[in-house]
Length: 240
Image (cartoon, rainbow, N blue to C red; front, side, top):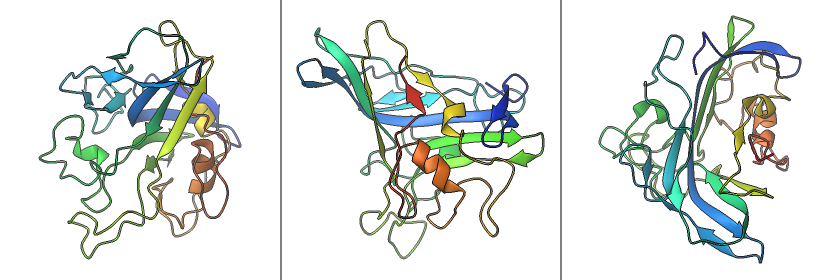
């Protein structure tokens, strides 16, 4: 996925010609839901590149023209194993677990070694990195991560829990893990966002700043509260 091949019309509100340039997402704690209400954790395949322990990185960019900072390798499916059973849904968390979120990316093991998915020690990782350009000129990055992380220095781990961990739990029911496909829908995520404007005095797009009003619509679409508003249902992932 790169700028030269992924132009989509009618993104956002009002609709814009949006050029998708990057989409990478960390997910963890993938769990299968049983018809009887049971929950069974998937043991992820440990590939040494995109999946380690209970964490996986979904990588839809291929490092080609228009994908600044990307890599040729992609990873578009989370793989793992679970006991045979009557499973009717799946649940997972968008983000990096707090105990892994504030490592040094320059020395961390995959999939946490990519410094383009990292701010600084105190702020931690970008759980989701969506980059794009609207109408050929206006960039709209959405970088999701924890905020309100206390500490005297940005180049040290936080001194306590972050006040806005911004971890979004995705629950998809009516899903058969042996045959179904989960869709990642960036258009739905940005459907209520005006991609052609940017709040005065704020960073471009949404960088998860709790004072940036551009984050309100996209936070609601990913199932997170923002600025006192209750979260809406997440629409980034869906299973037909």
